[in-house]
Image 1 (cartoon, helix red, strand yellow):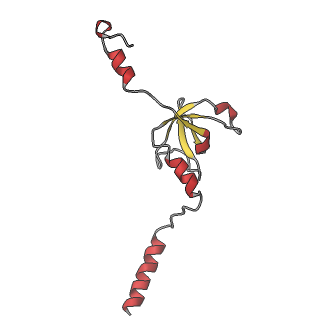
Image 2 (cartoon, rainbow, N blue to C red; image 1 turned 30 degrees about the vertical axis):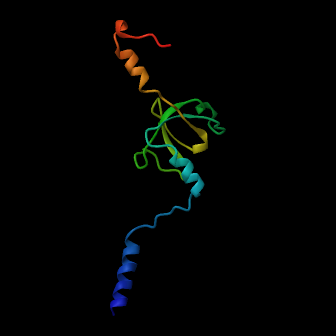
Image 3 (spheres, helix red, strand yellow; image 1 turned 180 degrees about the vertical axis):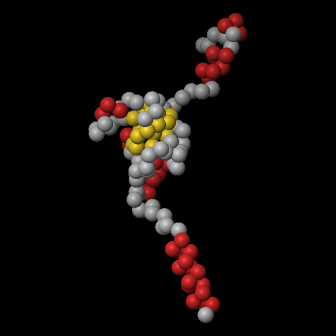
Length: 117
């Protein structure tokens, strides 16, 4: 009787939550997507369907914060002018922003700036 009750509890627990489906994308595709952390600055490239978006910059939208439905195998990117698009990782290039040097240079008074060799 205890085994039947345990089996019924397990079945009820399975039925109360939808199954998590990871098979929509491969492990390699997931690794490629994981390279792009939330809020990473990116530029769109090598797009064929929406060529006019090539060269546009934006930020990777954190999962669950998108205003549009998720697309398997794609990351959501919010472009500079507000449009949100789903893009495959191979059509994104991470932008490297040098945050440490530039603000310090602009914050210093001209007399305090040193010559860089």
